[in-house]
Length: 416
Ligand SMILES: C[S@@+](CC[C@H](N)C(=O)[O-])C[C@H]1O[C@@H](n2cnc3c(N)ncnc32)[C@H](O)[C@@H]1O
Image (cartoon, rainbow, N blue to C red; front, side, top):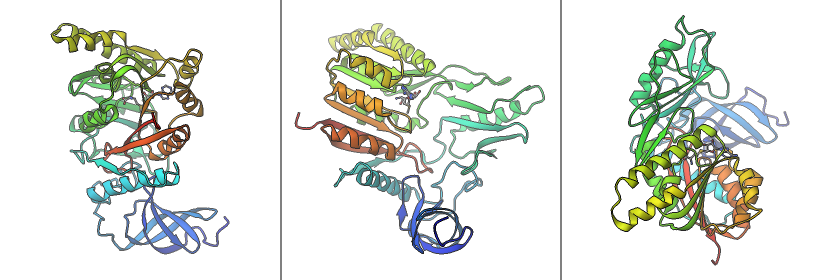
């Protein structure tokens, strides 16, 4: 420990603002403090749990003067469960904090002097929005829920206020099945997802009926299961797709990290040739199936030339099961012009190899969909250094009650 502040000593601080990762920023006794579960403007007595150089990680001991945007967190597991870390904030303050976090990342990490205005679209449901979940199991202590904050101990959760009601019922069913004497060796974790129709649980459990689920978004129908990625909050998917695609159309589009084809299908309505790239084989199976059934449905309703064009585009969509970096490397052997490239990587963002490959393709337009503003900003810095300009940034509050936020950044080749 390099600071004079001893572990477990308490300090009085005022929270200046919220930072990426959702922690409150404060300064005291030469330390920059990151305070968990704080609200901007709170005056707090905090305990410093850990010090690294000039940075201290602290937790609240006492709220001396609550921020005007502080609420009593409604969930009984707040603070212990590692989930919803923004429940102490009014919804407006959550949205403001997310915009500030994105702007902070663009300025500090991407080094953009004056970032474009960030709009944020709120979720119509602030609770009961989550249609997909991953539950942890401790079979020795018979616990089912989420990891505790900063640990891999399981916080037993009987009721989760952000789950859609059907998924809450599933949590209760899973609890009954998983600790039943007939269940030989419970899995370490369980994935569950509900669609407009159907419930899917992986791995399958006892009497719980598990199906392929389907979800209608805009004019498209998607089939998937708990074994493949799908976005958690269906409320905002239509505006997310609209923003990510804008009025783009043309000859060739690429959808990197395409999952089950959330963006691939609408892209195929606008571009003559679309390629989706995804590493997970279960997801690519669903993506192909989703394209095929859209093609079939469209084919059975052929009226007007626009539909004919869209149908033949669907027939030409290619879904590749590969790691993005490997596929891009292969493309660089015989590069073809790309009009529009959409990428939606996991929270860790792109690997260096992925960025190099994207820049070698030199798409006219790039649409970057991200669930982590910090890795987005890191990657934007590299893309912009290669001659792209950032045209717009929009945020979508896909994860109310948490610090997480979905962002769409639209870029184009500068002076093209
Ligand atoms: C955030 S999800 C987006 C999926 C899809 N665009 C959607 O919105 O439903 C990221 C996807 O990237 C896939 N993935 C992760 N790393 C990858 C890699 N290196 N190459 C290809 N796909 C990858 C995951 O399996 C996951 O389906």
